[in-house]
Image 1: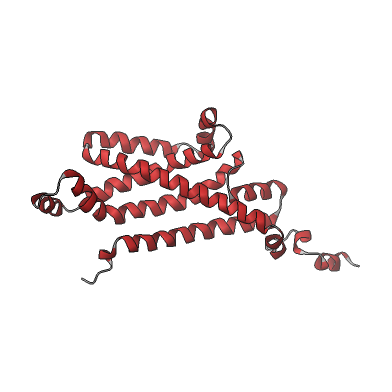
Image 2: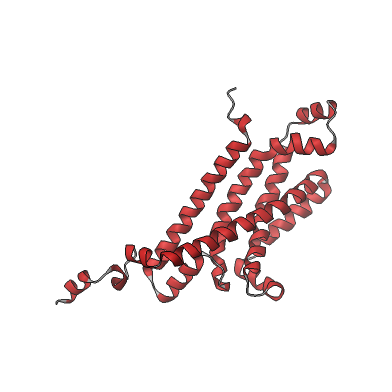
Length: 229
């Protein structure tokens, strides 16, 4: 058989095509496992980041003199390259998923803390004064007035942090805990084109789906924004 006909008769895996359905079907379990790890690392990192960003943002909002230090410190963390960040964490957390999560949490703080502060600053002063005048204490004012009104801005930060984290998780492949990044790294190393493209497309789709889900969550938590004027 001529070489060109032989190449045509071979499967897409043998031809090393970029787009290959046989790769997806034959390695579905591996893809799903990598996707599961990717989602887990993203969700855990963003949730921890948000839990840390809320008190930090509130502290920076309450004490303007400390605001520059808090915001500046989180910005400095974001300027550290991811490979360097993971290397700095290795002596403390080792070659584990914890190293990846800690690094991702630190990166997310830059976005989340700023949005918490911006959201609280955007609450109208007259609304705060009216709430205080009707008997709201500091805690009830924060929980029932300020945070709900700041929620759209905070959620905007969560959306950006989530999409950014989905992308950064792939760098964790250098530690063997990169979710879909493990497939991308393996495919690049072995020149397995279908593996690289498939994993990359799923990462992009995951970022889009995560953003859409957060939009729906935000709409459900802020029904007053959908109310007719």
